[in-house]
Length: 276
Ligand SMILES: C[S@@+](CC[C@H](N)C(=O)[O-])C[C@H]1O[C@@H](n2cnc3c(N)ncnc32)[C@H](O)[C@@H]1O
Image 1 (tube, rainbow, N blue to C red):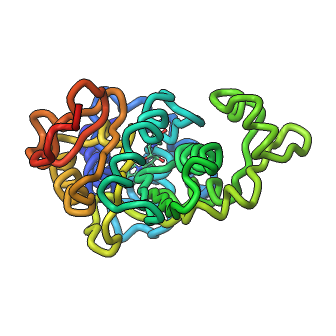
Image 2 (cartoon, rainbow, N blue to C red):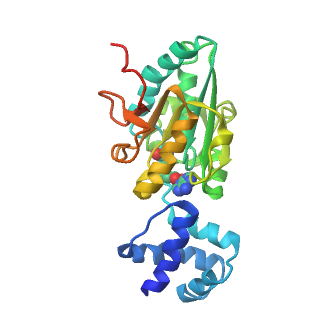
């Protein structure tokens, strides 16, 4: 692909989603966009590029961004963040807000829903211990298509096998053939919403905990910095931010600092050290 053509996609993806693609990913562009070309009945990449040079159809642009973003996720991904949510976050919120409070959690970039549903299941599993606490889970993603999947709460055998413990699978899902559907009481605990992390976040109010995992990795430093700074304004003083294993705030923003001794867990940079 010619550099000028590649730049059409590079600039569009950066502007619409923050995604950075480099010329060595040119092959990825062509393979991922093949289904879009087919869906839209466009003869080839040259014709698609020409369409994008004019005033492209909004849905076409959305389909291209969707095709280029990575939706990889799984239930209980990395396990530890969910253990830490149970053992560190909830006690810290209870200390700050008192019993019978509402704990608000944001799963930003939730993909097909495994992350927020894992949080909801964690809450159900600890329901006796956490009686009196009200949980609110907001789950957002840029992709409307992936959000539709998340809302449906239907997963293949392969998807549930990747992280869902068998005991919880039979407890919280119903099976029809090879499809496992998450039960309504878990589904109802999560509110899904379409949201671009590049946009202002003021409308969301304040969260006690933010999961923003495995999405910043696709952005450049200035974009990561802007998103983290906006998120710091949406996180309560006692709040906790979880990032993915390959992500950090270090060298990107001064709004957060790592929680001592806890990988992937961040608090406000002026938060007091945790009580020993
Ligand atoms: C790799 S998945 C991460 C899912 C989940 N957080 C996890 O760790 O398993 C990344 C998700 O980020 C979403 N995404 C990419 N750019 C985004 C943006 N600018 N705003 C919101 N979501 C975005 C993608 O649609 C995708 O579903």
